[in-house]
Length: 297
Image (cartoon, rainbow, N blue to C red):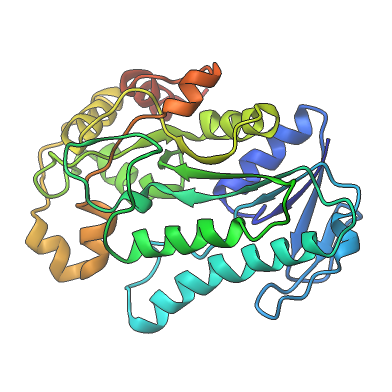
């Protein structure tokens, strides 16, 4: 397949583009600088600039664009940036597709588990309603923007869980503490974090390219886990203790409302559509995921 990808330079995009290329697909990357190879195409989503001809002949478009949720405090300016960095690229891609006589057949545009807000211990399938909060609003608008693609395009909006990686991503700050034996749960630890390993995430996106599934898809591991269990499994795989709990008030003092939505919110997600479609996980359990994260192989 010829696949045009936006957001290919991030953690997920780097892993996914490498996986798709190794599977024999032709991956073309949209970049916001001067292209350095024939496989790169310039665009400027902030101004809606993209030559529709760049998408002509593509089988699929994958959109992973979006500023890092937890990289900076959530000031009003930063919140606006989180919205714009997701909505502008998505609308630019959808608009370019509408200008083609034969647009790509598939548009996979990332969303997030934040769609469900803080849902406590409720089990969340793809049919669960949107929650409350900034992340939920972002995801609702993000998915709506993807559905501005022309009729006939199969639109998939993966609601991606916390990505477990050996470096960077959601564990970028936690793993070094756990490796040093000075990490521990966040808040009560009873909140559910939906999770998936980076290899399984890449496999899931590749699977969605040809599965025929459309609409929202929970991209998470089949085993649910609260933070206490997740941190204990990671620490155990690293052969380190995990006793230093960080209380919720301290997290809120340092991180403000970002702490409530990113660290303390609970989302017990069930990947119903992936399971029903026959997707197979490499790391279906938190034990296998923790062993992979801790391993150098």
